[in-house]
Image (cartoon, rainbow, N blue to C red; front, side):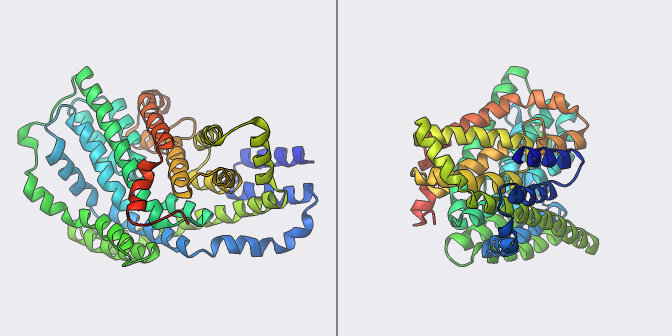
Length: 428
């Protein structure tokens, strides 16, 4: 019977039906196939309990703040600041690309938004100054995944809501891993710059540092307001997200003068993105409830014991599963499907919930730049016009560096836990 359910789900998926409806349909069929149809009557209550989470209110607000910032001219100010700081180094525009992603991460929290913005603005400038289109596109896609790791991060909010983990602790835990990833990408770019003799930015083209820094202060103040307010207990993440929306409106009008049409388009995009994420949560929660009824986490735990997998072995196996899932599934889908099933076993074995959240979210972000379904690869390829598979080949060295950073984070939990512990925040 379950074979028929899998075949039906595959048929629905290949028919082009939205993934949320595929998951929901498969869940209902699976309830029937496993003789749990009597529990379908209470399924709406179970679904509502999964989305009736205060932390999830921050998600649409941060999405709206990011949309407003993308349309408010903030990207140009951040690029100019990065240019003033590192433009004169050989391969300077590659460094500018990565550094801009770090600044942008503290504002939008979205890899796709970062990839789209820099593909439109920085990639043409890099090709004009002598970089190949493939390399410029590859480094843009690779650096974009800093966005969901450095706070504010939409996927960390999502994980926190799924696992009941402190969003504030997750935000703090993402800072050091994000900066380590940025440093690793800067080193790789420096290597390519020396090997391929990438150009420096001419002194005449360099923006003056002090005026550029002062002009960028409204953009730089946004992450300070958001993170500072949360960390020092002045605001909850949801309240900080609301403040971020008003700060984004102010910064947008300061830089470019947000029009009414821009604001309305931002609201429309926010409604679409938020709605799709919440529908995915509802569908996945139905499947998760069935997993709880069938005691799948307990079965996985028993299997781990039977196979002799210790905490390290299970963490490795789980990361391989998440890495493969990230290549073919959207991050919210992968989190909603896999975290409730696999994460409890890791917590039973002593994993810290905050460290686990950073590792799993970092892991899935690598999928954004990995074929065959890498979301950032698709965006960059579409915007710049570079061949998708040519871009996929060019980004392999960057992906290997990202996997090396992931391995470092797994091996050294203190890298992600130092800041939360310094501020007295635990995993719950």
